[in-house]
Length: 210
Image (cartoon, rainbow, N blue to C red; front, side, top):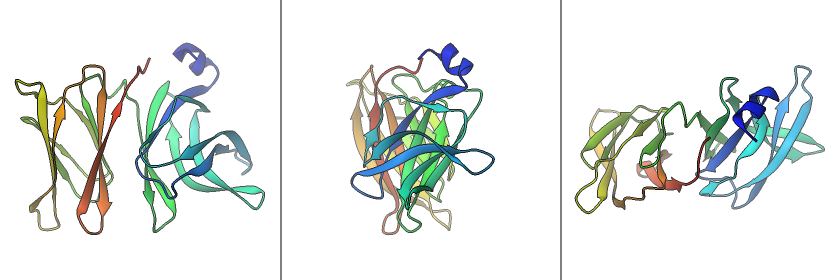
């Protein structure tokens, strides 16, 4: 589906990035509610940890991920699909206490998420400080940002993540070396963790956005 056709049909495409899931394999319905409260179903997807879905068509407006219960749907996540976009990434993190998902939606073209860059999602409640080689990026709680790593002579860079605790002190929580892949984009996720304060994970992303 081309961007022009997606706009004309009142639809766009989304790619779901499931960082953590409520179950190992959880089938959910992609759905929307009309003003009268009636559900419309637009497909299903099975969520699992570290899932990167294909591009999925969906209508513009507010979307839900829902479970099928007692011949109806129960929403466990909702997020907007903006009218001024053709393709979006939807990052999901499971909230085990609420039995729901938190979602962050980004337009990768508008954010200039190009090959060789890193898209940082901060799902935690702490400001995050991310060092990508010699490039430092601060990402506030609930926010996201794109950064370009600075590589060393061997085409690698060190990723160091720390967060600011309640007293404003820096706490280190992640330290990895990453090799360059000119055909990939990388995603970095900061998630709340009762023991560590902030848990960090990463996923590569391949393919085009246009």
